[in-house]
Length: 180
Image 1 (cartoon, rainbow, N blue to C red):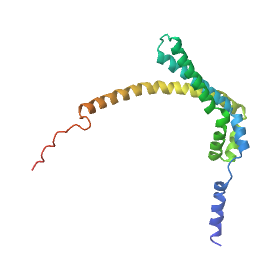
Image 2 (image 1 turned 120 degrees about the vertical axis):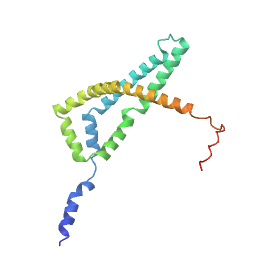
Image 3 (image 1 turned 180 degrees about the vertical axis):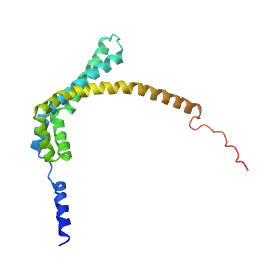
Image 4 (image 1 turned 45 degrees about the vertical axis):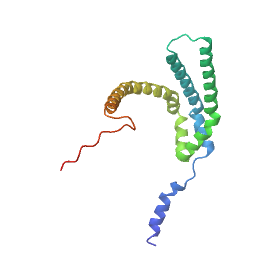
């Protein structure tokens, strides 16, 4: 009898560990309410813009002849096809559902659904991409000077290491005899 109370408490408090994960329907509803497909579309548009920027930097304002222009156009076409196929919502949605179902409980999904259906939740959905974009820009501005310092430090270390090394396979100087 004295073991019954601790056993009951253990079972009661660990019931959450045995709770079933959220239903697929509730996770799909959450993904719809949070406009995950549209967010993915916006991320895709950002990737496209980044690609155009990279291409512009790579050609550095040079005038491409028709063959060079065709090479870039063919690459962009291939890129678009690949990204559209690999990052389509129909292909990614099952992964999203799986991750959400493995990560959240039904109660947590229900709570998020309740929140995201409120005006505050909808405002968060609407404004979060702007917040993310602005914080990314600010972070990049902080990271650039840091990366320049790291690059300078790395170059110095590599230069010093190179000055104090011998080519692989080259004979090395014999070690000095040990002091007696």
